[in-house]
Structures are given as structure tokens and as C-alpha cells.
Image 1 (spheres, one colour):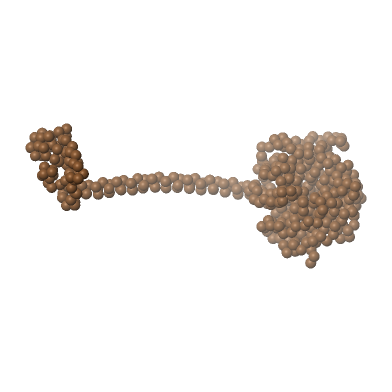
Image 2 (cartoon, helix red, strand yellow):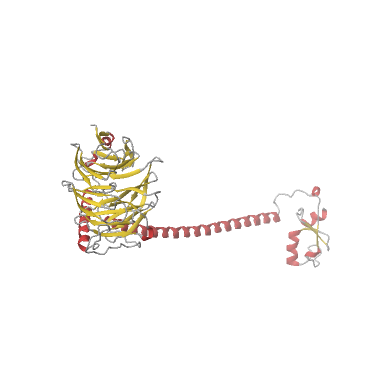
Length: 503
């Protein structure tokens, strides 16, 4: 111990070593530094190497507590520790700064890329909206129309053929679409004067129920329409192969239209008030003179059963769909089929059809749950709306032309935005609810659904306004009167029901 104290100047070494030359004990780190600089023993000045140093083990009991940092070596060591800590801290700070700069650079790059993508998508969205607003949808690569060749003779057992979409027909379609588009823009979002409000709709109740219009031997009214220019006149088609023209106010049958060989699956009351159009699974479409009660034309556009027809806004042309997987566009004035089309890429029976309000596009529903939108001029499928389960059973375009309602055998009604080409609302019904018909009123404010019951939705929030449970069997058709002041529905219980306000 005296040697230790002497050699280290009263300092107790932490790692003591002894010199073989002088026998003195030194602090290991200090003597190694001295040897590196001088190469001699500090006591004898004789040449000394690190190999000549011997580690000394001191029992724990002999170690003396180190004095406070008052000596020069302790102060130097403390300063060195502080310097090392400060240097390490600065290193970590610089490393964090570099990482933050790199992350910021990546975020700024991603933000710039996202802004460019958003700008591109916005441009494409605006272009799509303009295309829909002008009813000039983009063409698709689906199977083109197969225009039938003209023929000099008419075979009553085969679909009739026409010369295709002529320039005169296209001009008539485009002129009518331009007029209707201008009227819609002029009208804007203003609802018609006199439109029934929600409180009035809630007061609707069954005012009349007519069960004697069709035969009792083959019960069921399967189709319904109201004359758009005289809502006092109602047209029904039955399982009994007969169509009936009924006057609501007098409660009288105006005409009985007989000629189909099977049930009347779809009916249209023409706005001219003197013409009725009926379709049947017997593959025929009949155009009737209501006053005379006879058929003026038989349109043979299909080889399979026909379940849906729709009248063009001009009032001169008819759209029809069939299980033969074709849709047809026919001239009502001549009874000639202008053109027929099918989609070979997805060949399925067509179950529903309806023109868009402006008449340049239309929709068809298929037996494999697909809703298809077609461009009439180009005769191409321009959009598909999947998502339903089961055959499409009903469809309806809103009056403003922006929305499409569809239903299938999955107990749901789906609402589609034609500007964005996507589903924006699903009306969930009971699991066993069957939807057979959909209809918007002339303002597009209300949507009526016919099926397991009859119900009315308000299109602002899509909430249920009124439910009617008056039919004892499936409701098959539903139509609004002018300004939704009354509602008519038909059902498999053979009844035609009229709902009017009690006020």
C-alpha cells in the first residue's frame, strides 16, 4: 500500500499494475500512456514495455474509497467524460436531423404525386359528367349490334327486320334529347307546383279496390300503367291474356284488349291517350287502338318470351327485352324492328328494360344479376352495375336522369348514381321481400316499390314515408298519379287498388 500511494501521489488506483523494474504500482491507463510516450519506467528511467507490467489484485476489503475529484487527473477525466457525452449527444441529434430531412422529403414527394393524381381524376370526372349530361357516353368494347338485313316479305313466325338506325332516326332522337335536356336545365331542382308533400303522402289510404277487371279462372294482374297525360286512365295486363283500359273516376272499363296467347307481361299507356302497347311471353308485342279495341300492329322482335317494354320519349319507338338474350328497338308507327342487339360476352336472358328520360341511353337487367347501360346511337354496352343476387326484377330512372333504382331477387333496392357510375344507397327489405316493380313520380321526389307490400320512399333521405299492406297477394305493379296526388297498384289477388288522401 505505501508503494501504491507513493507512486500515484496519494491516489488509489482503479486498475493497479506493478513494474518489474522498480516494483512501483501505477494506474494502468496512466502508465500505459507514459510508456507509449517515453518507453521508460517513471521511477528508474530504465526502458519499460507493457509486457513488463503485472496486474495487481487488491482484496475488496483493502480498497479505499476514492477521494472527490479535486486532483488534476480526476478533473481531466471528468472533463473527458463530459466531452464524450456532449459529442455523442451531438451525433445523435445530427442523425435524427438527417432522418427527419429524409422523411420530410419523402412526404413532400408523395404529396406532390397525390395532388397530380387528384387533378387528373378531377379532370376525368368532369369529362364523364359532361358526357352523361349531354347523353354522349363513351363507347365500350362489348359486342356491337347485329342489325338485321331488310327483307321484302314478312314471316309472321319470325322476328321482323329493319334497315337499322338511319340518319333520320338518329336526328329525331338527338333533337328530342336536346329539347328534354334544355327543359331539365331550365327547370333545375324546382319541384312541380302542386306536388304532394310528405305529410300528404302519409295520409294516403285505400280509396277503391277493383277485383272484377280480369278473369277469376286465371287470377292475377301482372302489369300496370297509367296514361301520363290523363292519369284518370289506367291500363292493366292479366294472367288471363287480356289487357283492360279502366277509368278511375267513373270506375268503368273503357276497353278490353284481347289477342295475346299468353299472359300480358308488360303494358304501356301511350301519352296520345288512344294507343296501348302490350307484350307477352307469346313473343309478340301488340299496338292497340283503344277506341276501336283492335290491334293496329304486331311487332315481332323476339324469338323468346317478352317480359319488359319501354316507350321512347318521342313516342314513336319502343324498346323491348326477351329471354332470347336480345334487346330490340322498334318503330311503333310501322311495327317494323329497327335493330336488335345482344352481348355475346355475357349471354343471358334479359328481364327488364327502360329508356333513360332523354332517350339516348337505356338500361337492361339480366337473369345473372347484372344491370347494363347501353348507348342507343352506338348500340354498345357502356356501363355495367353488378352487385345484385338473382335475376333483375325491376328498374326505374329518376325524372332528372341522374339516378337509377334497381331490384332483384335479393330483397334489396339499389340506387345508382349515373354520373359517378356507382351504387350510393341500398334499401334493405325483409329477407323474403319480393320486389316486382319500381316507379319514380314525375318529379323524382318519391320512389314507389311494389312487391310483398307497396311502399313509398322519399328520395332526399331515402326513408320510408308510407307502407300499404292492402293486397292479399304479391303486388305486381305501382304507378303515381300527377304530382303524386294518388297511387295505383295491381296484384296477384286480381285487384287494382287506388290510394288517395283522406283530406
